[in-house]
Length: 282
Image (cartoon, rainbow, N blue to C red; front, side, top):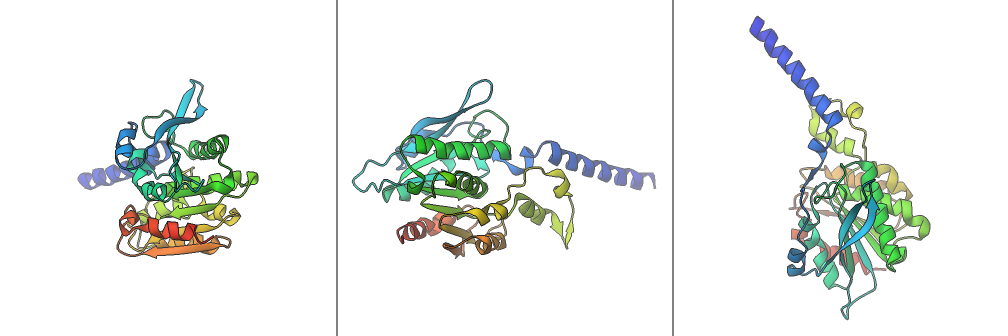
């Protein structure tokens, strides 16, 4: 009997420690950044000749948020810029390959690094990610790209920063396009999906998580054309969430559903060809 009581107490204590860790240390669960910067030389060797730039200052200690910028000077330059906002893990180097075909097609590219990723200071939070995304747009405006010449492209967590920056900055002019790859409705919807068994939520995330990342609300206010891309084989974010966002999005919009790719591997199915085809439609 005493052994059974000890086991029950251990389970209860462990459960409350789990809940406390989710509340006080959400970065353990929702973000998986590299704590070292990406190597721009690898991007250059991989076909994207980027330069490292500072796109905004932050913090009382004068921290600088950096990113990778490629200004297309080739004959096929179309004077358009792709702002690529990456997901909840790694650093910019892990994602740059997704923009190489776009650069080869004539686009300039900017991949900002978020605070908390790539060895850049500050903890990760919804507020900081929002500020970084907005400042990335402002930086592009400052170097001569108006919103109408900017394609905002977000992947996974980056779909939130892409949506937020688009809605926040479209007051200065509508963007050329918005691309959302493997998006979610809210971070809570996705997290609850992974802790729900037989219809029962095993962790009260609604009470523990303060950063909601509400794409479903933001997308209703977008004033530019939207391309949403998902895969039926997404093991991380249920594809039904992308489909729901598509329903909420204003026209003009397009939904592209893939088969045979996971959350991170749409590139292997050459989704960039669909992106380029869609961008050239108008």
